[in-house]
Amino acid sequence: MTAPKPVLTGRRRLSEGELAILLDAHARHAAGQGGKRAMLPFVDFSGLDLAGRDLSGADFTGSVFDAARLSGARLAGANLSGCDLRGADLRNADLRRANLRGACLTGANLAGADLTEADLRPGKMSMPHPSKGFPTVVEEPRSGYVDGATLSGAILDRSQLNGLNAVGADLSDSSMKGAQLTDANFRGANLAGAALAHADVNGADLSNADFADADLEGVSLTTARTAGAKLGQVRQPPGRPAMVRAEQLVRQAKAHDAWVRSGGKEGKPTALDGEDLRPALAELKGLRLTAVSAKGACLAGLDLSGAHFQGANLENADFTGANLAGADLRGARLAGANLTRADLTNAILGPLPLGPGRETPTNLTGARLRYARLDGADLTRAVTEGVDARGCRPPLR
Image 1 (cartoon, helix red, strand yellow):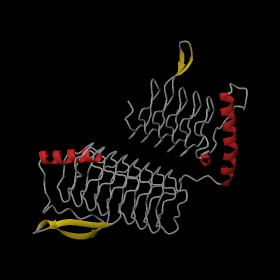
Image 2 (image 1 turned 45 degrees about the vertical axis):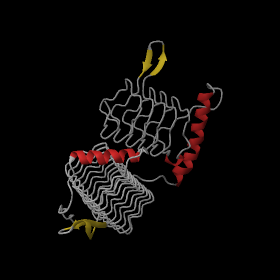
Image 3 (image 1 turned 30 degrees about the vertical axis):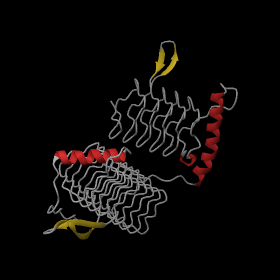
Image 4 (image 1 turned 135 degrees about the horizontal axis):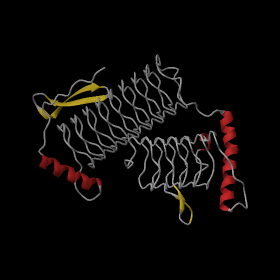
């Protein structure tokens, strides 16, 4: 199903001066510094450069943004219902809780965008009256469209995607936890590496979709159409044995923490090689796991904020979606580790001092840092040869 092309009759085209005045006033309003909320329905923004603008809470009902540049724009809570955003650049845009009902995003680039709790359900396509113009409005029902769009690394947690047309969309490495996809059309979509835990796919068309390494924990596919879907390599959730085992591993990790804190007088060191620690959730948060060996361990989705991993062997470990904010990873061996969508905000990945004039760098050779958050992270002299850093923010240099 293809979205109808926008009808531009009656839509206004503002001059650069008018637009600058209105958007500057809105930015002041959004910052609580006076100004005025932007009310810009039925405006033709096609091809304009609005990158990085603060447009949160603005009303753009029925406007056209085809091929507009909105990368990094703040559109949280904005009303974009019935808007056309075909081919728009929305990379890393903030669209949290945005109203996108009946919006068309065909071919748009939303890589790394945050659409947490956004509403992309079918809605109404509002158009100025063909002869009377605005404010007389003609409304027609329209589905939401992201067919052929790029949403790799995007966050769509708890978003409303019921009835959405997403044929052939690229949602690889996206996070769609708790999203509502009832009766949506994701035929042929790329969902490789996506996190769909507890999403509702009742009645959805998932035929020929690629779910390689996707997390489908708590997802029931019994009423979805899955003919031709690639489900053979779906990431399996931890079973009962893994949950029981994780309880023991947490105790061992805490004993290692005591061993580090006491200088070896209490507790004892442990090894976590190849273990599945996903059931631990936040139990390892802030622990001192200095020099621990966790080669090939699965720590996906864990809250490891503030944890100490100095000199740890974490080669080929899975940290997909893990929270490592403020973690101390100096001198850690992370070669081949998967840090896709990991939060490394203010993490320390610089060299680990070993003595006078001696240090060992953090080794990230061949690691995956796709769509990872690196704000404030210290990567001084880290070994980054062969790192896959597509979409990480800020870009890895």
